[in-house]
Length: 573
Ligand SMILES: Nc1ncnc2c1ncn2[C@@H]1O[C@H](COP(=O)(O)OP(=O)(O)OP(=O)(O)O)[C@@H](O)[C@H]1O
Ligand SMILES: [Mg+2]
Image (cartoon, rainbow, N blue to C red; front, side):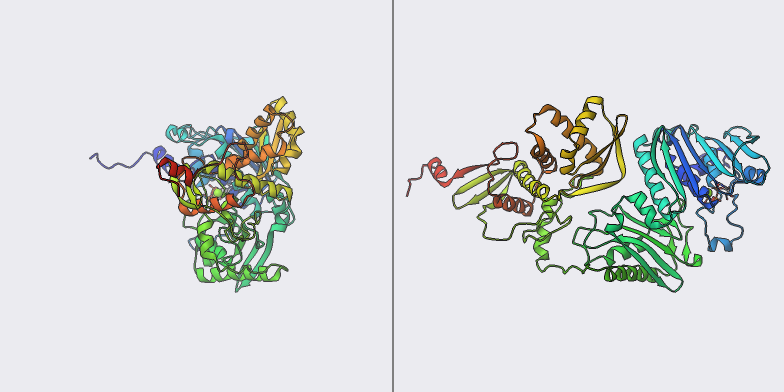
């Protein structure tokens, strides 16, 4: 083995920086946190190529004197912490004094800052391998940090950067989340020439939720407020029986810091048990304010986890808040868990492919219990002459039998048909299951497609797609049928648009629904459990017509007992 040596400072700096700054998103996070700690009420984030080539964060906070500006790039230099005891009561987002030196070690960084005292503003330009350049500059009170060519000196790291779109997504999600904790701060996020969000200062969390989550947020959510001792929990969470099929919109903040925390998460989900149907989870924006001494924020390099002195108390506080909010809201009664829960369990299963939303059809229990989006009530139970499922052939056909003989059912066509009929019913009732996206999905169309999209907007709207024309050739997709994931929504819409182009006027609405059904249906080659096949066969045989799929292809073939007997040369009796 080689002898032990102490690493050269530039090497150890890079290693340390790599821990704090993993990707463009980390830079944005650290810089925005600094702006908020500086008391800014306006934060503007500009990116080029999702932050790969440029990240600029400008604030109107307290700024820095020249001496502080020079010092802030030294490791462990911070204005937020003085003594070991201070570590016990951290009120700021930052406290380690590591972010700026780490960013400066792996990029070309320019800082401009003024503390508004009348002295000239300071500009400092740094390269990891050279002396910093320090000059007078013009800058209003506040700070701008510009980070170029991130990881230019760490080629390995640079090579593994995610795509511009995925980085941008992460950054947008972060800004949306932190903006909820700081409603009094205005935020803007721009990538290239595209403005991704622009939220002026808001008067309250409710107003910020409206900006960030869309217009019906306050209908979907209940306000929470509970106090225990010196701790208080406030915020908003789902109004039962509304919920979501995932936990993606559960946001927790401890003393305004966004955190991922098991205790809070478990407390929330357990408190909603019995209030929401199985498979649904609450949406939540919960803010815990707790004495600084009762929570340790110094447990994770990204500062995104915390540890509570008394998790039991925190747990109870959440439960108490949820209970009070729910009881206090008129018309919300805890759901009774149905006696046939076991049956439901077998019937309600998901056809989750990676990233795909649960298809509503499967959530309809055999008993006709309304479920999930409450969209597809099953028909009343009655004697249904349906064949008994025997098994699956080549993961593609369901083999079933009744008194008359055997039936071989194409699983894809059958499921497509069932979904198609359900979608038609939902559309007729104006209840196509919809899902809103928090950040509209923006996309460009060539001029001819753009015209098509505008022309057919009402048609798509009825089917669950809300598409708006933003000007130029840019559109935004704000809502889509709740049978697909966000990732699938745009491509589904674009392929519908393409399909529309090739057809005549008769295609219209049923064509859209048939395409949606086709997308959502199980595919050939997908293994199905007996329970799944039974749910499907039952739903199929409840339909008045079940011979042809929406595209006109047969759904099943029969082999009658008579045919079987002929084949076996059995004398007719
Ligand atoms: N936007 C800003 N406005 C005013 N002062 C700032 C700003 N950004 C950084 N500073 C000053 O520079 C210091 C160092 O910032 P840095 O982000 O490196 O460390 P920190 O915020 O103290 O801790 P952490 O590493 O946890 O973020 C801060 O303590 C603060 O005094
Ligand atoms: Mg910081």
